[in-house]
Length: 100
Image 1 (cartoon, rainbow, N blue to C red):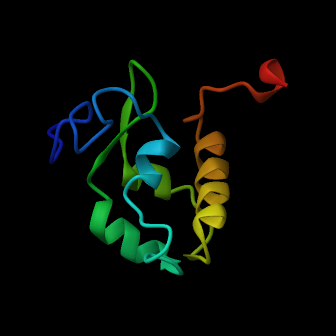
Image 2 (tube, rainbow, N blue to C red):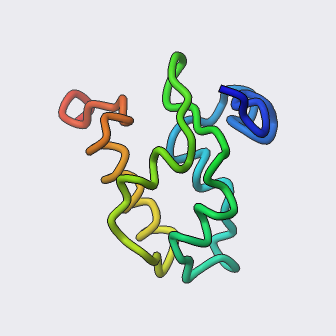
């Protein structure tokens, strides 16, 4: 796929240091961007790439197809919603039970 920027570059995954939710969160300012509407975030970032793991890159749109909430009050609610969405869509590589 032709991405608007390199998923592994500075605008994407910060040189392969950031994956998944970390890539989403770095697009936000915790102090200034909340409350945040889902439609606004997707309008601004929907076509941008998010590296899920060393093999897979998806778009912000792909993730937000699975986000049920329409608005996020703060960064914590944003993280919870995107985490649930990514797990339900099979975009989450961490097995919590193995790491407990």
